[in-house]
Image (cartoon, rainbow, N blue to C red; front, side):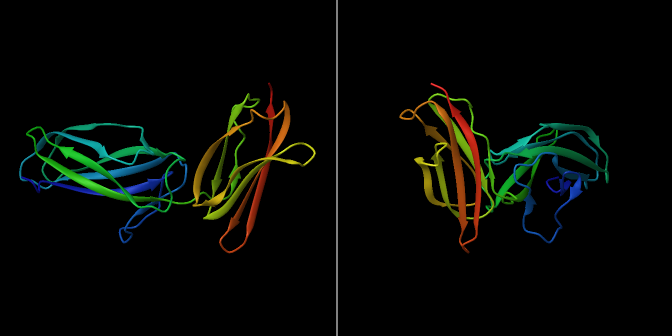
Length: 216
């Protein structure tokens, strides 16, 4: 009976198929919602199977499934039934690193099967610097941003006269999402500009800036 269930999987990204059988891993859009995995559960046994349960068993911490356990009261012989699981990808997900999702399928008599799906998260589509939060703040705030490629990153704070008052980050970073706490305890109340410059390995530079308010 261990070969009674045949499970196939199709990954759907925002309702459109993004991968083929030939691929080793399905690519997920960065920080995306509306993704889904459709499992096709087929009974290849000579007898019907009752109370078949399908559920996500293991997954990366940055995957959020909308549905949990799904139950089929009965799967007839040679019957094939689809089951859809929708999920989102948190922006904290590491990019360009292959990981896996495992589904567990069990029957009422204790038989079990597993289906593993390998996934990889694509980098962000472009450089983005987010509004700090909280804002206004006193004395700390969070600065966050996304990198589309591995870069040398400089994140600095300036006053309204253009004078540099703090260097928050100056280091090499891989593509992905980052956040950093900025402590402005030594600064006076006022409006400040924070500027992000990312220099790719090929030398191309990307820059973004925004303003924040320190209110002591």
